[in-house]
Image 1 (spheres, rainbow, N blue to C red):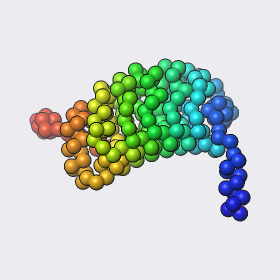
Image 2: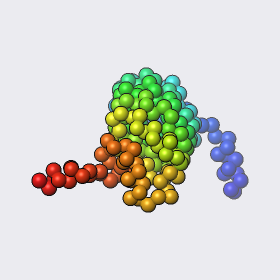
Image 3: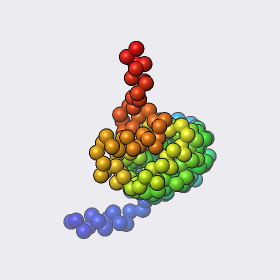
Length: 201
């Protein structure tokens, strides 16, 4: 029985972005091109490739493709209104492919992926929120690249190898030394000396 099940899975073709959009339209009885929020998560069989069929989502502000089997970010160059991109629980290895949306993307949710290198984040000029817990970043030289995101305020980074061998206090101190403008780290708001005095006064 088990073997038969495995065989069925291996024969299944991945869902394309075009098919996923069609399913969304059938389910919601709306045109995806007109909508500001589109969720293409949990497709079965999973989506493996982001492609140019996403370009029909001209008005989308929040796009979710989480919980699929995507390895590379692509196909979003023409999404001029995109503010929130959710790609958690995929197989993404790099930030490459985000350059075209860097001027207006405000939130990137990319936890539970396979990112080890943080190259290319300097393109994310408008980004305020980056959720990238449970990835593979293991050294400070890579972490330091996050400093290249000029407006970053909220970072979720737990369960990367880099912070697993440190106690929470040491990790937070090291991270905040490198990213002094953060307002929230790992879901905990940052209160700096001086701000405390203002609150008490």
